[in-house]
Amino acid sequence: MPDLPTIDRELGWAKGLGFNSIRVFLHHLPGERDPQAFLQRIEQFLATADRHKIGVISFHNYKPLPELKGDVEALKRYGRPILCT
Image 1 (spheres, rainbow, N blue to C red):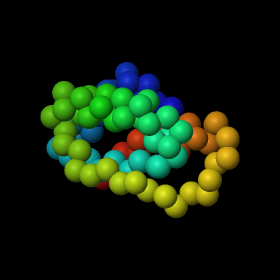
Image 2 (tube, rainbow, N blue to C red):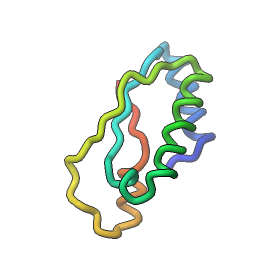
Image 3 (cartoon, one colour):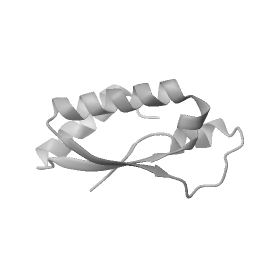
Image 4 (cartoon, rainbow, N blue to C red):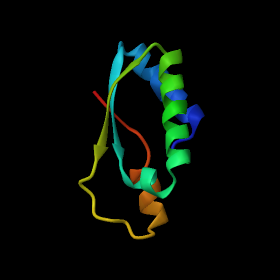
């Protein structure tokens, strides 16, 4: 799962490439497992994007994956924000 310094660095790269907005897809399972931590990560991500003056144009409750049934590593992989252009 990317840490905030990694997210900050990558949003800096995006800004340097001329991005002014991004679309973020979020999977529903992290929000179901730990809603408070999930919302805190979203807030941290939005604050980081705001510092780079990059707008976040959408969040989606994206549910194409099967239930992960306690697969912590898979949850970490699919629970992080995915940046798309």
